[in-house]
Every structure is written in C-alpha cells, then in structure tokens.
Image (cartoon, rainbow, N blue to C red; front, side):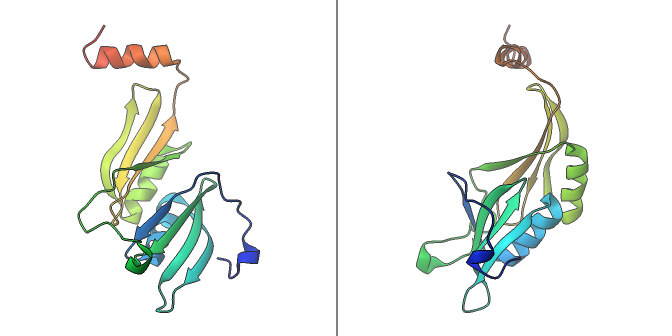
Length: 156
C-alpha cells in the first residue's frame, strides 16, 4: 500500500469503475486472497474508514470506497445483487476456483466447460458483486460459436 498520490504508479485506464461497499478494507482483503488483488493506494476518511482506495486485478485498476451517502456513494442493500458481472481472465480456472472458495466466496457456478471455448466459474462476494473466472480453452471463430449455440439451444 502506498501512502501518497506521488507514490501511485498505475495509470488510470480510459474507462474505470468503482465499487461501493460497507467495508472497503475487508473487501480489499477478500479480493487479495481470492483473486490476487494488489492494493495501490488507500485514503482513509476521518472516522478511520476508507474514503477511496485503488487496487489492481490482472493489471486492471479498480476503485473502491466505503458507503458515503453525502457523496452519493451507496453500497448495495444486503441481499441485493449488482446487475453487472466482473470477469477475470485466467490461465487456471480450477486453481482460481479453489482459491475463491477457500477465501469464502459463495459459489454460483463451479468450473464448467462452455460451448464458446472457455472454462469458467462464478462467485458471489458478500457485497453483492458477481465475479467470473474465465479460462480460454479453444480458439473458435464467431461462426463456430454460433453453430454450437444453435445446436445447444435446439437450432440447426
């Protein structure tokens, strides 16, 4: 973790996203254990919480903060699911699955071979966000994927 803006070395991507949770410190620890996240920067708020933090997964910069209604930053209500899915490309879906399960993430889908040429699994974190680990297993053309999809869904 770095203590100052000058120490930050990660260049923000052209488009980034920010997660809002009830406990950003706990979330960063979970993402570190489950996905190998690397914390880049943390700015505490006056109460000792996290006003803003940054971490990377596979080089992707992600922002996170504690809930702060005064800044229109609201965490998902307990039991609600975010309508988005975060996909992490990996070379080892099964190993990543074991790591995520050990970290305490809720398993939504165990490692599965998919018709589009990947092996993937999906987790739910305690904050309502879904995370997919995706391992490419085949190089397929769009036509090959569409043919497999049609076969699977009862088409030609």
